[in-house]
Length: 110
Image 1 (cartoon, rainbow, N blue to C red):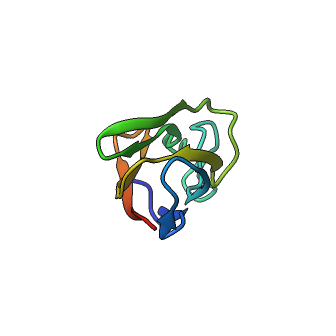
Image 2: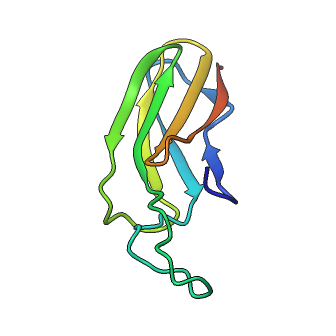
């Protein structure tokens, strides 16, 4: 598991049923390529790259992104969603090293 990884998500607390709203996500992650060497030991630093990002609303997929190694440090995604009911949005980031980072945000209808 990479150290210092912190997922952040910004969603509205309330949405209007059937109307689009914007979601912003960022995960603090070094995105280590596996090609750099440790300056002290000279050994390769193990690869650790976020390779997939998903968002689900009440168990239904909203977005599923495959991420290639060329993506920058601290990947940021912004997208729109439409919901018809209140519920939970689950955001998940998958790391090459097997680590999984997730966070949940509730959205109310109002």
